[in-house]
Amino acid sequence: MPAAMLPYACVLVLLGARTAEVAGTAGGGRLRWEPHCQQPLPNRVPVTALLPPRLDGPWISTGCEVRPGPEFLTRSYTFFPNRMFRAYQFYYRDPVCREPAHSLLVKGKVRLRRASWVTRGATEADYHLHKVGVVFHSRRALLDVAGRLNRTQAGRACAQRLPSARAWLPGALYELLSARAEWDCTAALGFTMHELSLVRVQRHLQPQPPAGPRLVEELYLGDIHTDRAERRHYRPTGYQRPLQSALHHARPCPACGLIARSDEHHPPVLPSQAALPMRLGGRWVSAGCEVRPAVLFLTRLFTFHGHNRSWEGYYHHFSDPACRQPTFTVYAAGHYTRGMPSTKVLGGTELVFQVTRARVTPMDQVTTATLNFSEPSSCGGPGAWSLGTERDVTATNGCLPLGIRLPHVEYELFKMEQDPLGQSLLFIGQRPTDGSSPDAPEKRPTSYQAPLVLCDRVAQDFSGPPQHRPLLPTPLSAGGQCPRAAPLSLLLLVLGLAFLEWL
Image (tube, rainbow, N blue to C red; front, side, top):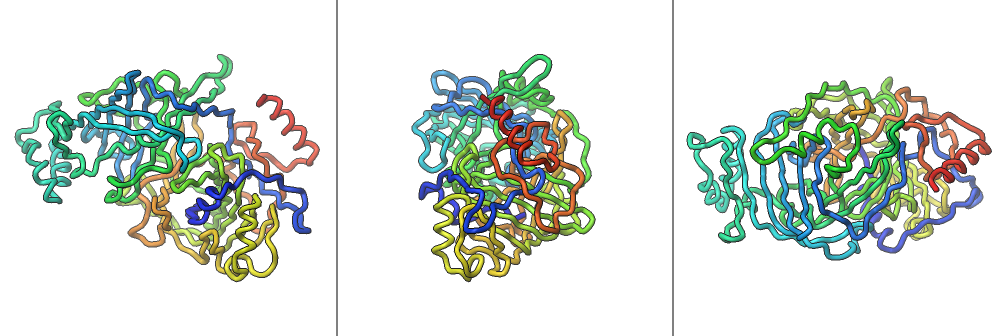
């Protein structure tokens, strides 16, 4: 699905795109208000970023993670006051993390350096590995890793350090890296810990009536390149799915205790999950401010119409990690094919999306100026762009300054889950790290972005002009339910009450 891997977006951010007050009228036209459920970030509570981040303590996955490849894993990292760390990475054969394959034990040292000048809100760090060991939980897992090592000349020498399948001993730890012995087989295996080079820690309070709010701490580490061959050289500019503090995590969390108590000899086996059918019909919204590689901050809203397999989406771009300083909004629409189970990524569904229509709304002065300086035939046709005014770019085959091309086809990967509270989640394929588009079957994603939350199961018909709602960053106030149309005076009253509550 077309997300905003827009090459010029990072240029706008680096030029200093900031919030602009959008007047009720701009360029003679009224500011377009958005459809129902447009407000992103349901259930949002104030989030505090810790600068500099405090890493001390244990951090764990809250469920089964999917990395590009695909690789299915859970993580358990502990950082000590002397800057040493111990990391467990547990790898699995299945997408629900119930069949352990092998575990990695990683020890080293990490040093926080400075605030990142590339990714706002992040901190850059250096790390040094002292030891990396692997424990195989089956002969098959041993043969799989040995097969990967044997693909290269350097890897063959490393494969000889591993036992034969007959000599495999359950629970035995085999070293892949030793700083003391000065040998390293992690490169041949394609393993790095570059995720430690970009760090962000956030705190928020999770409402837990009637007991009262509960502290939740999240650790965001650098993203993993979607191309395995590039991982050794890539320095992250985005994040992975966050870890949560083992002491202060969201509740309920059936996997948290299992992962926190595990080690390389006893990998966690997560609770079984019922497979959910792919029911896309409805509206899905970002659960928080999302960060993409190349310094893109955004929120998303998708509406799927099951009766004719059409879709439409809003991509709201921002210049800050809290998603409060808008830069531009892209509306896109088209059709999608019937899904087929993925044979490469177990648990996923493969679809093909067509993008046939798009509209753009500049939301700050820098983006507005950029569009006005572009060739009219490249984005929207004749006429000046105005701050806060939406324009259709379908007739110009997209918007070249923002990297939007029409018509466009993308090969997608979807997955649906239910969180411990029973809320439906939609995972859409991770965008290529290099900013390209999955416009060929071989470029179909093998991992996922941050999940979208179901806002409304019943998808209304938005084929006509969109109903107008104020485009404001105030969150929904009631469990992600889509609000119905309301008078402006009532909206202002609700927003005022929400502001007082936030204070």
